[in-house]
Length: 210
Image (cartoon, rainbow, N blue to C red; front, side, top):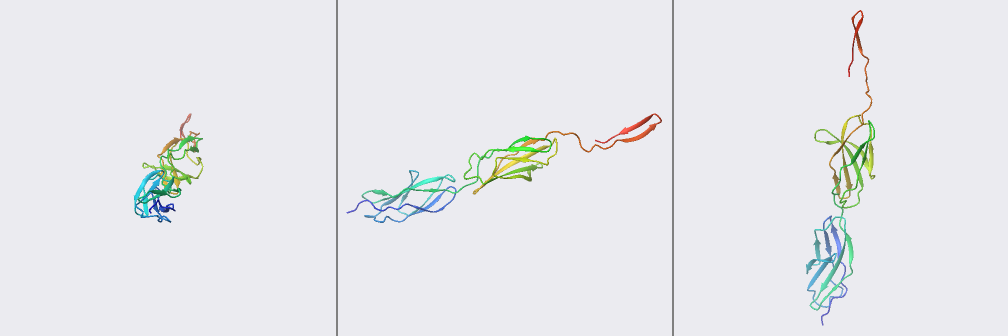
């Protein structure tokens, strides 16, 4: 007499990316009849029904834990195996705001920032980039590390500068829009001696360069 299967095994994750899991499983240890269907539940939601012993689950979120439960059925009924958890892989971060810039003096700038709104995995490092030119292309890496702040030095007084931030994780990177700051004015440098010439006996002509 047929009855429900016994010894339904958990699905095994064969491969994964940031948005999907590829799963395989073995038939029940004791099927107790003809298996009519397998049901795979992901997070309590039915994601696959069929007689295959493998399935691809798609449209998942990056770097998320999911609970997986396999159900095997005969004409009499169904039984489920143990629930297991598995995780999708990281993906590129999303939603990185530009750095907040404050001029510390004539030659230095402070930059602070927040993590990406959607990190899609652990953030491994940040790069603070100094930009230049009409297209705001990278001219220098001011800072590379895991901290939420950095200081740019060696700048020119009273000068407009543009900076951008890049966040990296194991799945990729994201770059923020540029933000700008003007360094503080300083006293003039490079003042040359004036040029003096005799105009006539009681007068001199004095001129100078900027």
